Length: 110
Length: 116
Image (spheres, rainbow over the protein chains, first blue to last red):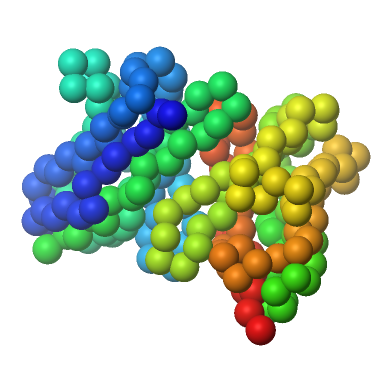
């Protein structure tokens, strides 16, 4: 079974850049698109990246996504960190009729 | 603007039933696959069920198979989840989500608490 693994937590200072990884196992991360969802405390998830590196309208270009076939991982990079970026971030992909989510990464903006 | 509004959550005893609803607007509901995704307290996300735009293809996670039933009313733009034989570990916020291979849009969620 294809699984996605994320670090439990990352942190960064305002104005800095952080990267959250999402490592695939049991298959190739490049086989299907990866999405990233942001979930602020007490709120529903929202999409910040879809189809590996596409931003929905309204998501600032500080958010970017990428795929690295060599490490079988996807990454979400947030530059120019702001306090409002503090949230949980989940990667997600799919296989046949199954959605798989990473376990989530808590981003703390110090 | 796409809007998804869930309702129907609440407190129910183990073995009980609930019916969740998701009212939608702002897009052509009949053209899109729809999903129910849940999040247990302090835990991650789990898609529990999905339904194709026509209703002909349905998916259930193993954790709810045989107990939950997903349905949709394309004329009303609404999605439903009938939950029977509820268990304590079904306690979660249930989100309605639009999309086939990913959640393009999410509702605000409705809390289901299963407790005696």
